[in-house]
Image (cartoon, rainbow, N blue to C red):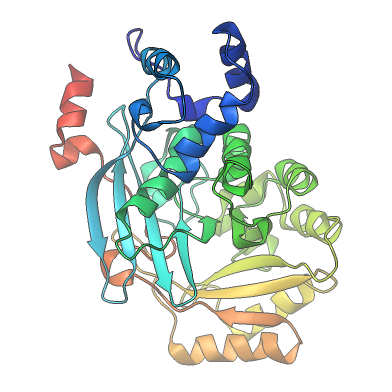
Length: 359
C-alpha cells in the first residue's frame, strides 16, 4: 500500500476495528451496523450508511476506503457459467467463476494471485506465485458477483478452489471464512455450503478442521507416492501416506465426508488398476470422490481421457461402495472449468489501472 492510500476497511479484523471505534470515541455497536452495510447491503460508499451519524460517515471516509475489484472481463458460457477476470489495485488480476443451477448459485473463488505448488495439469501453476490475497479481496469476489447477478439471486455456495492454495494463505482465508459464515452481519452462508480445496498441507488441514466446520476437499489425483509426486510436487513435503493418515484421523462429525478430487488424465492415472489402487488407499476414510475428466488448456501435455475409461474408472469405485460422482464440465468453452483458471495481467489487457500503478 502506498503511503497516501487509505486502508481497505474490509481487511480489518473485528479486533482492529473495535480499537479504531474506541479511538474515535464511538460505541462498540457501530461495528455491527457498519459490517452489515458492507457485507449484507454491499454498499460501496460510506455516505450510503444512512443509520450512522454524518460525522462518523465522514470520519470513516477520511480513514478508510471500501475496496472493490475491477471487472476487467466477464465471459458467459453456453451453459450459463460466468467467468470473471478481476483487477486488483496493484495491477495484478485473478479469476472467479459463478455456476448457476436451479436451486443454488455457486462461486469458485481465488485466494492467491498465481500458485506456488505447480501441479502439472493446472493452468494456474504456470503463472507461478505472485502474492496472497487479503481478506477483503477474497470476500469481494463474492460481493462483486452478487452485484452482477441480474435476477436478484445471491451466492448460496462457495468453493475455495480457484487460483491459489487457500491453506497457504491461512490467516486471510480464515478471516474471509468468518465473514462468509457470520449470521449477524456477514454473508450468512452456511458452513455446510462452503468447500475449501487443498493440495494437502497437513498441519493446516488439521488446524482448519479444528477451527471451522466447512467441507474439506483434497486434490488427490493419484493413488501412489510415485505418480502423485510427479503430478503434484507438494507430495515431496507431505507424502500421500501422511496425507491419508491425517484425513483418516480428522475429528469429523458423523455422516460428514472428505471430498477427494481426482482429475482423470488420459493414459496417466485413468486405468482400472489406478481405480483399484484408489479404493485401497481410501479404505477406512469417510470419503466422497469427485472424478474430473481433464479440461485441456494451452501449454499442457495432458489430454482428456476417453469416455469409456471414465465410465470404467467410475464403475470400479462404485462397485467398492465408494460414494463417487463424475463432475460434469461447466464453462469449459470459456476456459472456466476446473484447472483452467489462468489470470491475465492488467498490463496485457491495456487496463488503465495497470498503467497508473506503473507510474
